[in-house]
Length: 129
Image 1 (cartoon, one colour):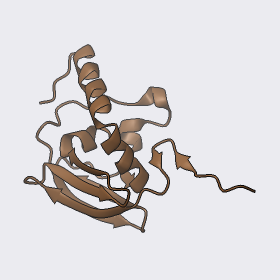
Image 2 (image 1 turned 90 degrees about the horizontal axis):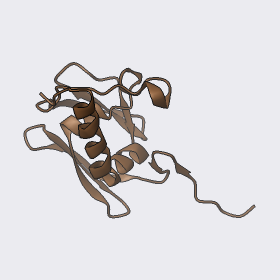
Image 3 (image 1 turned 90 degrees about the vertical axis):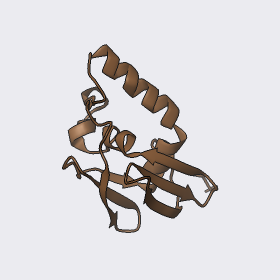
């Protein structure tokens, strides 16, 4: 059987961080990967894109647009095995598990995802807070 590089829909399956740290007064998470990709992911963005069922639902059409998170901060970063972290936010949310491939995808797709979020807030007449 030939070698096949597998990727998840969320990002490269072999995404592996070399650095992960909270920065800017807990307003962002800095992540650097072995492939050289490096991202600064704002806490607001991570919170509104949380992989939790509370935000994502159980199907793509169930995703919730979360308003009022402009000033949210990262309260804690907890390792989950050797494949992910659980981010705790100062608004009490902490059920999302951010795998390495998901963090890579969130970094790679940050501009498009955040623009879509802003458009959806506007469509629903909601505010970032």
